[in-house]
Length: 341
Image (cartoon, rainbow, N blue to C red; front, top):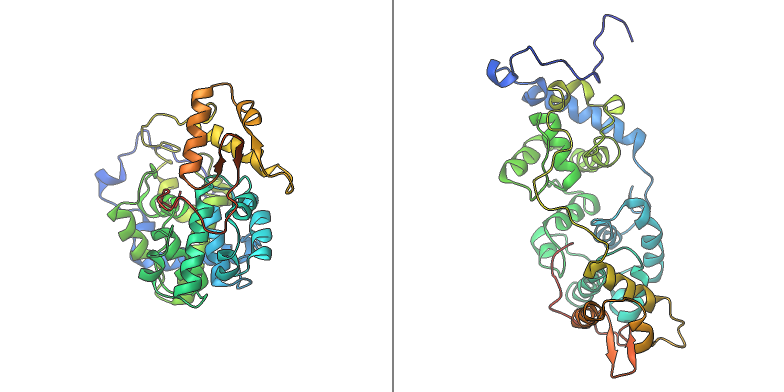
């Protein structure tokens, strides 16, 4: 780099300079005539750096895209790939998944976490198979009405599977847009009206370009513009980023809330129980009461977790003999959590 040329990734010293807000001079990234340049720069980066995931680049069906989105909720992509590949090999369409037993579905979900998502996905498959002739609807409102499908997933399917122009907002997209265009750190939580307005204003008008934009912003947030340690030196938008120009104020800050622990929680206990059930041989699918009691020392917590798994339709209690994964093909626990998490 020329010694006289400023380094776009150097955090500027703003200690003695008046703030941009005080000077009422917006950063160039906020100017409408610069949005196109940002769009083009990010599209070029996407085509050169996008991860070669099996559900990308038109290599799967709309159903395969939906499955990938459901599996990827709160789960790293590199963990999802082998599960998605095996899942789509066994159940390539909604009809196939609808006909599977609940035990098969829960077992195949493995260690992806939040196993109720698997039950909701199967319930979604039944609806698509019976009401939509085994084809995902191409309408946002109809997608949103499917079991377990929320705004993000419906929008992602409309964009990534059907190539429609629609704003897609997840944690990564919100963080990148807020940093680049507003010069502010994204503090997490739910998307605000301001977040949605920004996403809508910077979305390319062209359908194909809008799909690339949604994919590229999300990918940049996952690989480069990360929450705690953004790699500004590798960012294609560094020279146009309002957040970097402002000195990355509040980097890594989050909304104040108690830190969630995992060790010792009901979620951990439920996971231990399900892992023990998945490990059983097919010819002996029952986990005896004695084996269940040996899984966790706190008997009261263990019993509560067994009861909650039964209520959610994730296991069956077989009298005084023990527990097993659901044997029937009809998913129980229809009043399980309907959220996407």
